Length: 160
Image (tube, rainbow, N blue to C red; front, side, top):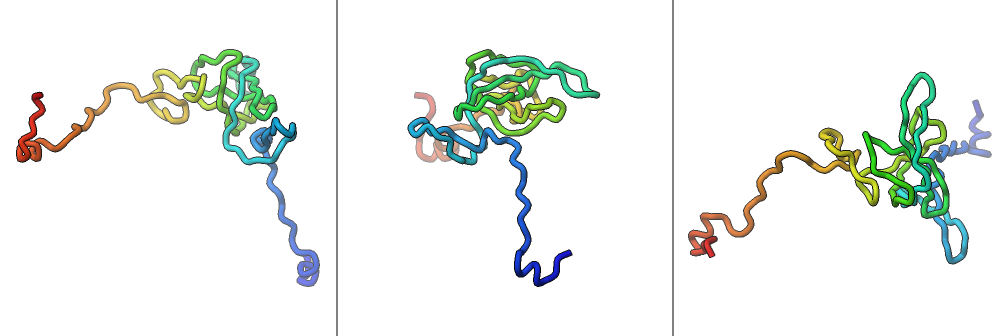
């Protein structure tokens, strides 16, 4: 443990957090042909390959992944969440950070329901995570225009 005088002389060093989704932290400037440091929550990319991967032990499955060339010219492997997909080569997708624990080297997720990747069909719960539209009966639309009692007072009729 340091003494007070040592802390006065040197101070404490901040421990820097490790960046996990590094491809989202830079952009390519085509004019100067240089990379610049930015902080992006998402990146657009073009799918170069769609394949399946087997997870680490003790899990067993065929997880769907895609190789994506991002707009900053970085190529990453991204996971396709949900059951079934319509993704093919040369499709445009939106990529976010977030690793898949049992797939080594997969540190990104593709966002469902954006650009060329459709949402999961028939999904009822957790729809926002999978880009699924609301299915079933919709609530009746509210009436536009004045309320019926106001319309009577003003002499407005809907039979025109």
